[in-house]
Length: 463
Figure 1 (cartoon, rainbow, N blue to C red):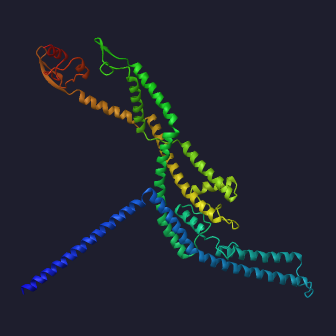
Figure 2: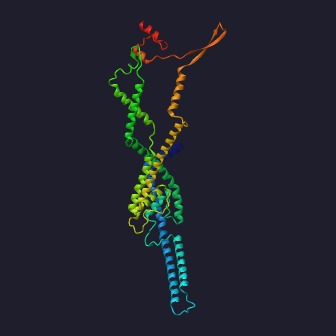
Figure 3: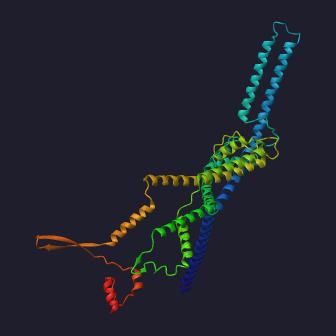
């Protein structure tokens, strides 16, 4: 009996040990998975991760829409081509029969139509044929393409379509016609637009900081040199306006400027460092003219590029670049749409890259322009007194603190016997701290107190 209970206890302990080991392994696996997820999320929301995410999302969208719409495009093309050929055959038969009836000698002159009536009937036949062709074009989106190969939903075309969705440009030159493609388009836009906006906001901030640093350290370096020179002249003029104070045969500034022969260089370096410190506190703003030149330069570069590749005029190319970067997207000019061009796919990919980089640069310029406009309005508000200057506010606060700490007064009542009145005398309880310069001229004795006057200090020093 005892042996059975001991065996059961040992088996229970083994089972508990195994369960503890499994729980430890499970928790260790969960911690690893959680750490991996945190690292993945941190990378995805970093600068490089967001750019890579947008690129992968665009390429995946290109493959997805190509897969969904390519077969339907071929099917619609064949159906439209067949219907159009049927209308063409009907028109041929009608015209031949009518012409034969009016030109042969079998009919009488009364049944034959004259020249005016024949023109009218033939015109009505052609109008009817044109109406049928337009209906086929609008129904199947057929434009007389060759149905033996895909014309619209190639991978470059689908990639450009995916990019125009997430950038909210929407040219409209190609659109999904299947219900699967339309539902995927809704879901793709719902997820892709926030990701792209987050990426653009992040990248524009990084580009803005880089360009601001480049502008302040390289482009405006001569401007800073001129301002530094003016600051030195201003400091020198202030020193000339406030000469040294002479007291009892020795100067108050002798304690600090004992060796003036080698202090000029140090003072100049101190002034430069102080100027750089004060100027570094303010955030550098890029002028509006610089940002406008960046936008104009990018549009001009795109105009030259598409003028060379698409054989558009410079005005048409510039018009396309501006409409695209402004996310207006009329769709009247789209790269890579010529059917006889063997490099149409490469031009579509080039247009997609131009759109992505252009949106980031345009967002950067808009951020810089916003900062400059806010700074200008703040400056105007300070000039007309709507906004209080930070420097004046600091001076007022310092003055208030100085006034409160300088004098702490108490009032005492004294009795005036001649007038039988009471007088209130203000007694200052604050103690005046001697200047440290006095300590250099008169060494401080051991029995010196902070409340002693200068005469008491002389007396204790003589003793």
